[in-house]
Length: 90
Image (cartoon, rainbow, N blue to C red; front, side):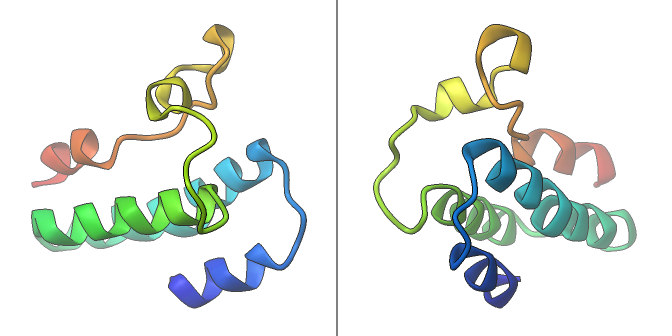
């Protein structure tokens, strides 16, 4: 997953584009795995860190994470919190 994100980092994507890619590449693969296996919390935390590194282009966060998690109607980016849905599949 990390190599796929690094390939996409070479392109100049908007925040919305990077959010969409984190959902398509990162979260979908983790949900697929979690639907069949039990995913440890360490894997969820590492994946969350990887997603935010991609989102911030491996730099410091320019947008607060609280804002990123908010829905689009409230000015956020509708970013998913991995810990919430992982309990659903456990």
